[in-house]
Length: 531
Image (tube, rainbow, N blue to C red; front, side, top):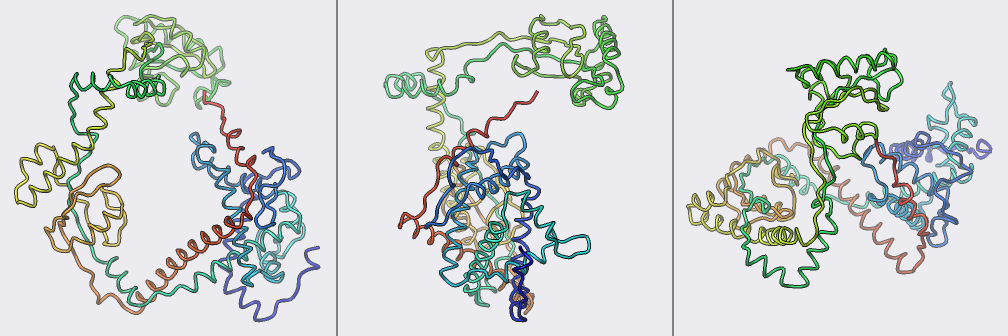
């Protein structure tokens, strides 16, 4: 058993472990988190694929390993994205597989370099981990066994997983410590961080450019059969835009009761009979001559949002509401007010303010609209570029009032930011943005080119500049910046090595993955819709 394998560490071993303790603590915290990421029956997998998940140079990534990693990622991202979580859209299984493969190949590389974690390192680390200690703070075989059973591990598989992770961390540390950053680089970093800039800019948004498409242009576009086919594809892909179901615009007052869905604290005090009687009283009240439905809804509805909106539901189609509500609302005429309508949420009093009939159009009916939209979309970027080029030329010449007015653009300031900032307020980030910032040294300097940031165009000039005070670049600051830069350089170096290791393995064709595991996202992406 585990305690039989425990061996006393030498003084030097203890020093090494203490030196790397932060890294190892982070590692174990990640492993320990699996206790909370969905404890499951270790003998069964919800995924379904057969066989191992992958092999890397003969090293097997087991089904259990993939299951644990996938469950942890699934739980983490489902909490992060809530109702919009879709594992297929995120390619979750593919991401998990890549991480497992990358970790395994890094382990193999680290082992080749003689960095494989020893039994002493692994066992000492586990003995000191809090989740394996009893109430007296001592290592507990029972706590370890509970963890292993709850997460589908054997003692051997768990210690090997810890060994692999510790080994990879040792490789990361080894590579990172080979990076070197000079004190001169620290000074440059200080200058960039402490130099403050304020840039003003003109923004040209192609989507805001007015485009006139003549009927002749549309005729010419549709005369091309290839364009006609594109129009049909656009129509097919966006049928909801051109066809709409029957819709109702309405308001409602909700009266809940103890057993109704999402009952408010006040509603939960009522019986179903009391709720129905209250709804009927409200219906009579809102039907009275001169009654204000919205005001009564704000006062009497149990729906939190309805108390501020007056029960306003806006326009809705049948499928957006529960069946009982929709059947009642769509059977009513404009101006009608219902009696007490029961649904799983309670009793509703519904007012129909307006109705729209269903709209069904053919591609022939909307092809000119689609063609016009397509032509406008194609022309806007070129027109925006022409506008920006004209304004820049006029600014360089000394007077751009007329061209700025024609383009409907005005100067906007970013506000003060550090020279090493990668994201400029109001502009964004790109290499050209960085080049522009670096090139603006004197107040009033105009960057000589129009900068394209994800389709939007910018003209930039320096509004204000406050240079760094080197008197504040003391020994402590130098040490801090050197350490930070060294860490960043080391991380970048490790990422480059990781990419190189994978390329080596791929070239040898020693990485094999089971595609059945990648496909599990499709099965897990179907979620029940809300009521």
